[in-house]
Length: 473
Image 1 (spheres, rainbow, N blue to C red):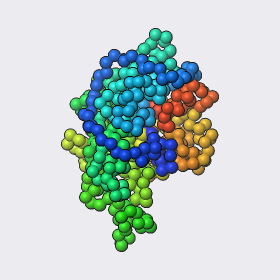
Image 2: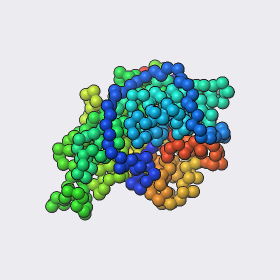
Image 3: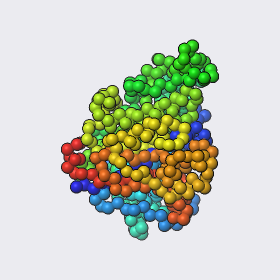
Image 4: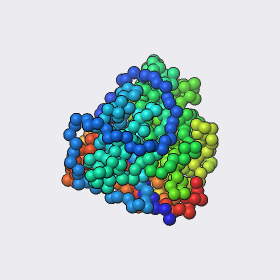
């Protein structure tokens, strides 16, 4: 038997409409710029680079907050929206070379959890960033880290060293040439295939201790929304006021937000959907990574709410029987969903809370409750409970249990939400899980680290039967 521990982190809130502190909200008015999108890469990273330069900011004392360590035979999977996005193309890479305090704190959190496989969301994508973050931050022991290696005075490489990574192009910031938001212009960040001021903004990357099977990676960046059966095509409600130049039909149905010519070109993924297979001692585990758009920052047509719903529904269809996912086609032209019986983990900031927020929660609930998803208690933390009580505001009206929250957002609306997920397949046995969100009583120093992002890392540990893994590659 191969024992596997996994972590899942879902980030981004359903209630982003009033989340004025969000990195996305801060960039809404940025002008769209252009850059060449470089090919995706799967790399076996070399020896760690030199430690990053001091930023000049004060570093915390090692805190008392300890995440239970996985055993040597276990696999731990994590997801983390790290909020490492910048306003200009190439800016993040420059920051990482010079020494970036935010990235260093993020790395300390990751090292404290010590995942074997990690998805990071909101890491700007270009030819160098993913590897820079790995070599200069993830593979350099950070003082606040509570990993075993960091506790050794001569340690330079963190415990459970992440060695491989996959990073590829995403739809954010890629000019569509169309007026997708119907404001009379065609080169706003909102007119890109996925919201962004430049290609690769808000990108993502998968890191792993184990080899990534690069030739079998499937990407779905170009999949057309209109090709999804029953797609929620954005439409004005009957009582909508006339927005811009778009009016209403005279019958009982409102007008489509996008005309037919535009609708037939729209891509479903706001970033991309990835199926990244990883070999683990003869077994194969599929990391299903994505980062659906926030279901806000739109109008009465709810175009972002519809897209978020269908980006998540795509995941449900991908892990379902062949007939349900037969419409799916990857960027290489291969048709169909993941092979039945495969071991997988769905990871990412899915921007949808099952109970609260401004999204369409039926989609994320149907994914969590899918028969091919392992049944287990949601990851939780003490810090989330304390934060909800301290912030009050919208949190007092939430129906969901605050201990399951993964994001700390605007107190008035939407409040704190559970939007980051790690969902192992039913072929896996969930052993343990958690959210890196300590209470102040547990560790003030660890709480200082968490200010680096408005999301919190989510982790899940699992066990996997070796015989099943070999039968179902």
